[in-house]
Image (tube, rainbow, N blue to C red):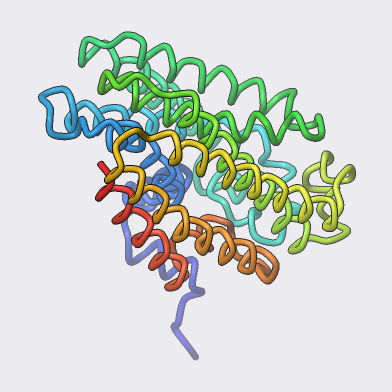
Length: 305
């Protein structure tokens, strides 16, 4: 008679329960989503402030604050969406939905993460960072329970979360953000939010509205045209910002970086069209050509500073 155990039991035997719990908690915190918090470095980089005493270290604190804040939001979201996630082909395996992380434990972890996020600004003597993190958390809670059911508005609030990250980095490092900077960040964030809805609609098709009711108001053609319109507006704003630079050296490099940015956006558009089941974050960070374009843009942008 075979003595082999089922896979789940074998895993439980191989790893102690505390390790399984810790792995479930980390998975719920979405470490794959943490790279989006690199947006906090956008303003310090643009303002060439990373070498100051209140530069890189303070930017890292801001990034940590938003990692904690976003993790707290994910814990709450997964508790609120547990029943709906069970009907999703992929999300039903999330720790809270599958029962690997009890809901009560997820809520306690959310409280701890929120406390850390709000304390970060006071730790570096910049309470405005805590105010921005608090605004992000308030919007996230409002989104989770109300705004995610309102078409178009929910896209704007998803984008607002990205913009608040960039604003938090500017405040933490004492770099006054320009209007052009915030506009480009806002349009880029809106583009990503629209792409997320498009890939979700592509993956779930008719089942998308059952998982996310607001999806019944969207269709693929509308989302694709909206994404491309936002990309055009973003490129126009970026070019106007680059042309407004007074220093010829900086203006030249920033205009050159617009070419790399345009190629990256064109690549993103193509990847979105054939995304299938891949999340948007994978399109940005795991496609070789996309990463090359991003690095080329970053190099030219930094050269212009």
